[in-house]
Length: 435
Image (cartoon, rainbow, N blue to C red):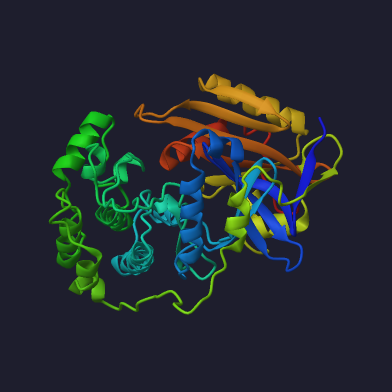
């Protein structure tokens, strides 16, 4: 099977770095500036099928206007005959979730700093009428300086004109406000505040305030706000979290109240977006004026049969600078939502070994073009669990296997990955001194 590389205007599309139900995220390089970007790809047929043209146009327009140092930047929107491309800032510092997994919990001062940056970003969104609705540590990225960046506005919403309440139940159950679970209208701002409170708790505790094995019990605990703060939480933190995790959205503290809280105020340096920055929406209008027209030419470059050959730019950028040790050292005691290992076995041997291991774990397996999707049901039966593995050639006899979570809980993905590595250790290359 022939592998294909694509060019999208000035961008050369690289490997897929994220995958969801309705969209994929690809790494790309701006050929004019050399800058790395992330491009979210959506099928127009999906947008048309669900009659979401006007909604997505409005949401993308406001996402472009919502510019803040703590929000992943939307650069531009492009279109082809069949797909929509959203060009985003590529953030290299990883997920905030990885810090929690690595360290168990964060020191209170560091948790407060991230929470302050999160509140500034969310407040800026709300000032523009945008409600995120899926705030959780996995959607909070870190840049190369360790500053927080809110990402993944896939569930963000704008209340319709003349309507103040949202009605769609969405988000991740453990972080969702009780009024959202109640299938009644809710205030998007109050719901986001609740999610921020759960995030603060997780940052400081290292675990969730509401975490039950079955959904009915989980919903019951959330609706009653049944949680206990660990003994190491300071009295100020406990007081603020209790005000945020108020099951009544009418009496729940608002962002203004949080920002005035003494615990929040400690060492607080507000981060504001530039109010004078001019933003053009011409590209958004062009894409959506006639969604079935072709606006960007996609050029294909044929390569030899076999896995994609990863170029040096991609390899270095995706490995966060010149430190390539994460590609080769699997002795670390944690893994990220996107993980990689290296093998000296032939590509077809790698794939067949992975398939056999996944099937032995009772998971469904589908492989195409050196890309394998593994699916199952999550432990709490709440959502489907899916992982995508793809083989890339990085040298004549050296292959990199990229593993990423496509659906399900991140902690469950960590358990899956460690279990998988034990089953396929014969194909994983462990570097030795002198190699």
